[in-house]
Amino acid sequence: MTPQTRVKERAEEQASAMTADQQAMIRMVANDLHRLNQSVMKAVDAGVSVELVRSARHHGGEGNWGDLLIPVIVTQGRNAA
Image 1 (cartoon, rainbow, N blue to C red):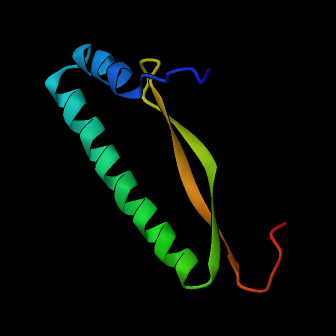
Image 2 (image 1 turned 90 degrees about the vertical axis):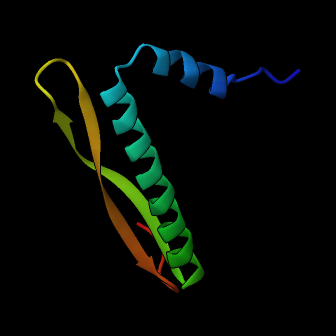
């Protein structure tokens, strides 16, 4: 039997513990990630491979952190390293 991930339920539980400003920032990140995913798909359809790699980690000073990403692009016909 496949375990249930309960993604929606976990997201709702986490959101209920956030302030309105924090929830707005998370929605902004989610929207930006959606646009990024669309761009990655378009790039792949145009003939390149895209790998997102953590380039750094931003620390907010109060124990909060976030990963910063860079794209590694491989044009068609070349092998990824």
